[in-house]
Image (cartoon, rainbow, N blue to C red; front, side, top):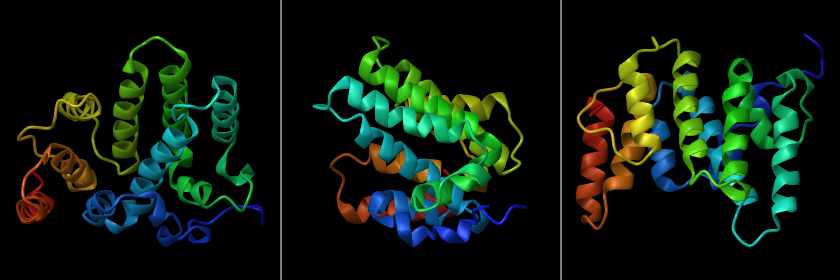
Length: 197
């Protein structure tokens, strides 16, 4: 391996903690330890793209920012520049870079396209399925349906997902908590974190 190869240790999880919300950090805590960089990278990357594509920016500037990420994801992780902590986390995604590239395309379509966000929803669902592949979880129709339901805001219902995808259950719980009392939200989160549904 060339000496320019990156290591996940070059971007510890604490380096990107500020990019994640407290519910996201709690959700990631229920993932198997080996998958936490992949989960952290995915959620932080989606937030970074959302920031790059935020309302009020000129579309051309948004496209330039997104193009930088698209170019990086077209390269193997060993060619990525050092100094960007998020790229350090995304090393865990090297085998599934195409799924992250689809997220970039989804955000671009959200800004300059007229698809109503369907490309972004589809890309988010595909990213969850790709994360399952990274975790060596069997790709099933039920898994693809759960990923699509979450990405499109329909919720997971009572579906039980494998432990590798437990953070998705927590993320869905927090998104649906609404105005429930904080203690109820946290109690529900702990239950879902342990039981997976």
